[in-house]
Figure 1 (tube, rainbow, N blue to C red):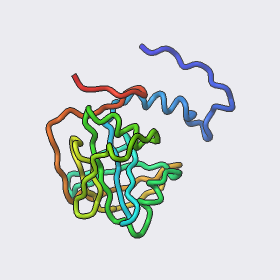
Figure 2 (figure 1 turned 60 degrees about the vertical axis):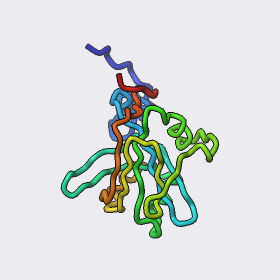
Figure 3 (figure 1 turned 30 degrees about the horizontal axis):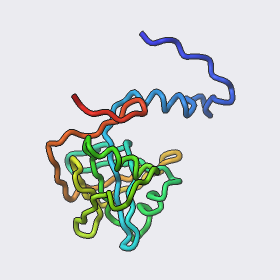
Length: 172
């Protein structure tokens, strides 16, 4: 049984009676997720962004969804009329450094194992890569939900990198 919630200061209360951001983040941190890097290019700029807010939406048609903060540079790129496709790379247990790199703690760019599929940048060594055509764009609070129609995928049987309670973990 969990302990009762502590009283929250009035300034921490979210608008309209919802949870405050800190409590919401702490609660959702109990959900184990895989770690992905979303990739895209406008022909000149190649960019990646670490994202754990990734889900399968539909098998038929094959749709996925990724949630992107409106303040992120990736948001502007994915919203561009010149960008019709994006990649989703499911990181392997050995790619923690890439998650950090694309989450704003960049390491050397040459350590990123980029490769291209029909002009779209993807990350080599990932457990899976998906090539998605932007299908639908939905505003959602301070984020935007990008729904992608999966046109191509490849995968391995390697172990994924997972995220739980604000830390990286491995299976097993």
